[in-house]
Image (cartoon, rainbow, N blue to C red; front, side, top):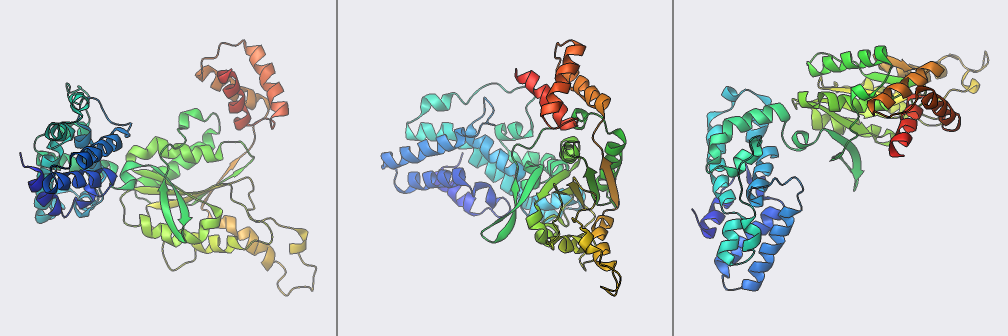
Length: 425
């Protein structure tokens, strides 16, 4: 087993997986190794660095029992690291990855396995501190341990290179491998993807009714996943009918097939070309969600959206489609003043048609209408049955109708809120 000085030399030689140690825990680990090599008698500083490293690692709530936290942390970083090898493995079959790149990745994984082996247990033994804590990291191997756990326990990580390559193909690398939902936000004048660590867990099975609408949207999404031309979609209609929930449910349903969701606010529509640059060429498929889309009469952002959906020199990549939701079919508010009297304008219909044409840029338009009384009650009954609420049918319906009178009328959202109130109570 190499010592701290040898490990530092090996870490400095990393090329592909260099980013694995470029985080807070990796920096603390390297500082601790350098301190052991250069100032082995400075026990106070070494103990402080060790304690900070342990605390940083233990903050990770995903840490499984029975594995050295440092080894598991490294395995997790390797699992999602975005580097020349993982990007190649994500995009092409194993046999098409250059042999030199595979050999380099294999050598670096072997090195990282040695670094993982010099974990908290070895450090605690070397420093004479934290032994009680370190001894708790041992344990038996669970029968359902995932690839990360097996990698962390292994003596030679190079043996896992083919399995890692398969993982990169199935799940992706970098943020697109770790997360399925994102928001596009501007920070310090620059747009960037911000992962959503805890997205809405809604599933398609949770959405009651609207069978034809769901089928149309799912069919279009299946085309996107298959690499076929998919339409931009406008989901419009009455409020509370599940338009946004349907879009969010898609990523929960098809995330394991490579579907990713990016939420783009109306004020960030001009950043659309930047979003394209981020996703173009990636093997994942992306839904760009623009929620609650509408424009007031004086606003001109709709012109940008029109040219972005169609009409720019840059083609929309085949791995992305825009799914917009709105409570209005005509996305730009129109007034009678937009219809000038005869003789007031040479082409009097142009102003009106320019505003109405935005909806034409969506190849698939799906309408959602609020349910009638019976449709609302059916939604309530279905949701209540799913929650196994023990209520008399008549009592349930009468309470549901009373709830609707004071909470927005008959809609799927109102039905869900009513059932939630019963569940919480």
